[in-house]
Each structure stands twice: as structure tokens, then as C-alpha cells.
Length: 140
Image (cartoon, rainbow, N blue to C red; front, side):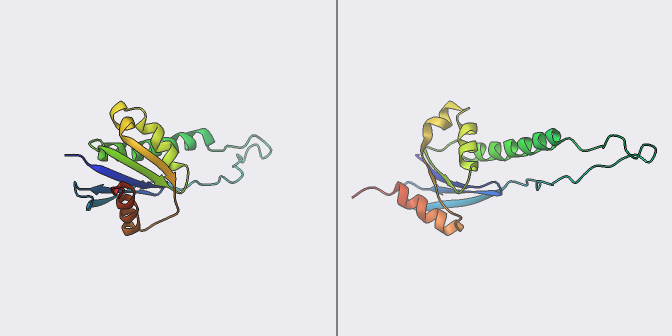
């Protein structure tokens, strides 16, 4: 059985549409990323003993590493969800689709099933399903 799938993704969520053999929508699944918001660090704090001493600031590199780790887990959930796809249509408004493609390229089987990657705006689940059906529709 050949499963065609479409993925709409941004950094907040991914919508995965699975089509059946006839080209109709079989299922729509949404995966939330659970990313923490980027927090801007204000100045820092100084100790009372040395008011003009060094500031203590949380490390930006630790926060960035945590953000990358959360994104990596999000992309792994998506890769697991589309592991048995025959063909994949990937779309989204930002850089998340490019980052997901890099994650998919780590698996040869999944990277070979990626058919097309393209930009698109935010869409509802029904709009995503319609776009995926149109993409995989047979050409008359």
C-alpha cells in the first residue's frame, strides 16, 4: 500500500495529512512542538559586596542549545510519524521546513520519499488537506 503524505510545518506545530489509495484524505494529525519562548535577558545582577563588580548573566549558549534540542525532538516526532510514507509533500511559511528536510536527509529511506518542498502561508487543517490532495491528484 502506497501512502502519500503532506506536511505543513512551522516552529509551533506540524499538520500531517495522509491520503489513501484513491487520493482521499485518510487522516489529519497535528503535532505540537512545545517550544519555550525565547526570553530576552535584561542586564544582569551584581553582588552587594562589589556594586561595580562583574555581572552575572545566564548564558545565551545554554538557552540556544536547549532551543535546538527541543526543535530536534519535535522534528524526530515528525520523522517517526512519516516513516512509512511512499511520497512526501513538505510545505510551510518559514525555515522550519528546511530544518525538517535536513533531519529527514539523515534517513536515506525518508529522504528518497520527499517529492517536493515549497513555501506557503498559514493554513487550516482542511486547507492543508486540500492542497495535499491537489498536489497528489492525477494529471488528466
